[in-house]
Length: 122
Image (cartoon, rainbow, N blue to C red; front, top):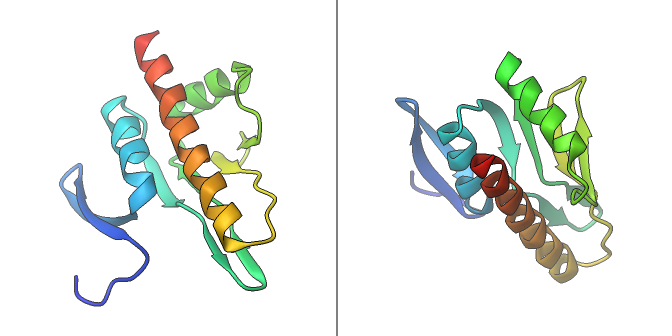
């Protein structure tokens, strides 16, 4: 798609063409392979005066609710906010500049991917 900015990548998920932020692709792909369905996501973006925090919004399914319950029990989820009522996972990133924010969001997505790998092995 011509003119896309911000590292969006085309991806075919369950027969549906979509575009995802680059850092989110491995996580969303893993979630889908594990049977968890997502609705929206954002890798996180820093703009002067505005921060869009990294998040994943899940579809309302029994499987997704089970995943969120599993994640709530994990002790390694420091700085990750799980909102069971709204079926979202987001990052709690405090930052005053774009470089620090970008470093922290990359760590967030890597950490979340590692957690999914552990869940896959259970």
